[in-house]
Amino acid sequence: MRTPHHLDAHPRPNPYEELAALDDGPLEETPLEEFLTEERDAGAEDAWAPPDHRRGGKRRRKNRFAGLPLAVKAVVGLVVLASFAALGDRWAVLYAEHRAADTLKDRLDLAAAPEVEIGGFPFLTQLADKHLDSVKVTVPDVAADRVSLAKVSATAHDVTLNADGLTSVRGAHVPRFDGDVQLTFADLNRELGASQVTFTGEGRDKVRANGTLPVAGHNLRLRAEARIQRQGERGIATEIGNMRLDIGDLATYRPGTRASEGLHLTPKGTADLARETRKAKALLSVPAIVQRMGVPEATVREALADDGKLAELTGSPRFARQAAGLNLIDLALENPDVMRRLGLDPNLLDSLSGLTRPVLADRLSLAFELPEPEQGDVRLQDVRVEEDGIRVRVSGSGLSVGG
Image (cartoon, rainbow, N blue to C red):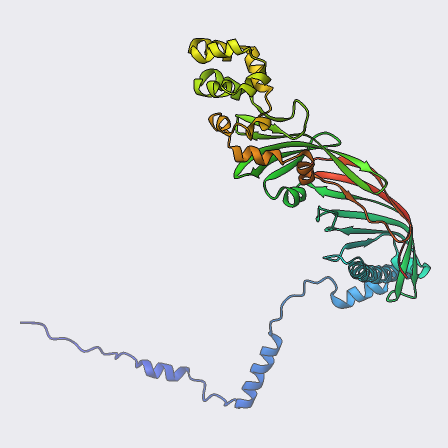
């Protein structure tokens, strides 16, 4: 039998009653406007602002400039004024150069406006004095006889202007100038060579021409030399020499009437006669050829009857010299079949007979002459062949441009 529970004689306190005992009474009511006012005041005191890292701020900089000595301020002002003056002077130069280029283009009938560069500083002072230290003019494309592309560059010194201000320059007087004319090989190749002949420099006064020349349907290799020299005071001339046209490796044509000129077999062509019986017999079967070579008739008959004798004759050094000395042009019209057996086209040989030295020289001529001015004097000083072309030094005096 379980023992019954005994009730506690001291009951537990009520927790809500203990809380009520701690109460100090009702709270005083705070007006809403007063609460909001306090919040705004606190926010105003704690408002965040970015830190100012500048040293002293604007006021300090103004104070620093204000504290500069008067002399320093004057120097700064002068530098600023000088900069504006220089800028205005350069603008005036560019304007004058543009006007001069347009004027030269119209009066000289140029394809494009030249480049004009006015020297000396300041320009406005020179303009006020109507005197320019120097004026450089570069014309990239000028007609020069057969060569339509030439670069002319000249610098005029001590130029006197006929002007009433920057916008009313009527003309100029040039007491002296110097410059050069350049004919580039690239232009010469395009103008004269027509992509078939190229020109290259060789020494101080020589130009070599190499390429191909079409003759009677055959492209013959062309080789020639042009010696450049002055002609008078304003022109240059070319003396064409060592001209030759190669017909493959069989024959070479040199225009002219001397014994070494005309159409002759090459060393390889004469060597082929010793190896090819048909060609040798064709050559020796023409009495006129045998007579010109100076071969005895008895020797020729033996060679034509015996291949061994033929090889012995055609293989000798003497026969090679005699065959190389033959001018085949003289024999082509009378013996066309023989020329065909040698591998030569009679039509080609007929065309070569009309291709004289003057005709070839005219195709390779580089000559030109500077125009004579209406006033003053222009003359050539020096002609020189350089790596990229022909350069001609020029000088002049007493020239006038415009009114």
